[in-house]
Image (tube, rainbow over all chains, first blue to last red; front, side, top):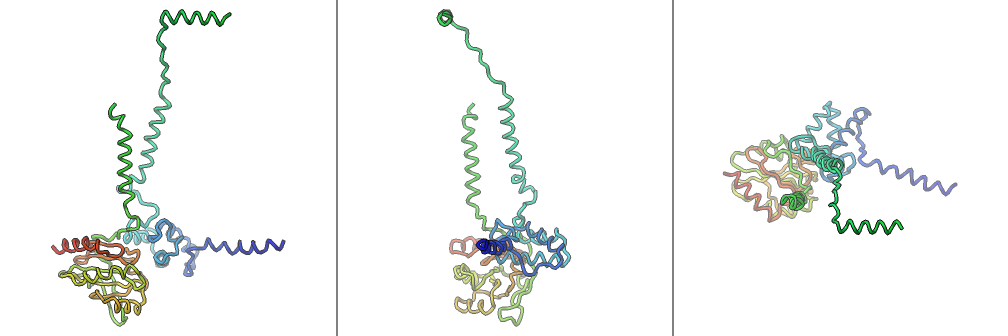
Length: 154
Length: 175
């Protein structure tokens, strides 16, 4: 079993990978720290762009995390902290854009497309199958048909 | 019937336009939310550290267009734009101020000594907190102000091609 020991040790060490963005100066109050984490998850790292500032080790993300913690410590509400960020960096700093006139297409676009698609699906499903009545047979064809039927009965 | 025949073409044209616009936008350019708003209040020490280098009071100058440039000695693109800053610093009716971003003052000083100092006044933002108040995401970034109001922001180094735009903005503000 000793051959398993080394992989287990390595595996245990690799758990640190999940600890990116963990700062030394975390808030001592766990409730405050979890509030800070909640806010930081909503904020975009402006340098790396598709990560939140929790996930990033960019200098600016580190600074913004420190600011979030400082402001929580200073008794600011979540809303005040978010406003602090958006007044400097605009709505872009929020990973989840707010619903406004400028973002209406973003939020309602998918719903709109779903409705259009739904309409076509509805129409397709509801349409009556077109059963065309064939033209009556000409006397000539009538004759041939009789002939064929007679042959097959033999 | 004619409409139905050309419907795919219309849809294609719509998608084409959407992509032509969308794919040529630069997602790295995050405009500051402070355009047409007052510059933040601040007071920064000088590079020598013995006095106030630059404060928001300096931006309230009715006779000049104010250009504020964030730079650092460790920032490569800041070297590239240095000639453009020298030209701006010598433009009539323009005052160029610098804010050293997260840079050791000694390093900033030797950077300016080797390249030349285009700034009328310099403040040091050691921790980069002042830059956050401006909505700066990194150096170099340049703001153009009139009467303490931020009117234009340029993200990244000022290349020769972008000087025209910046000079146009300054001329428009001067009128």
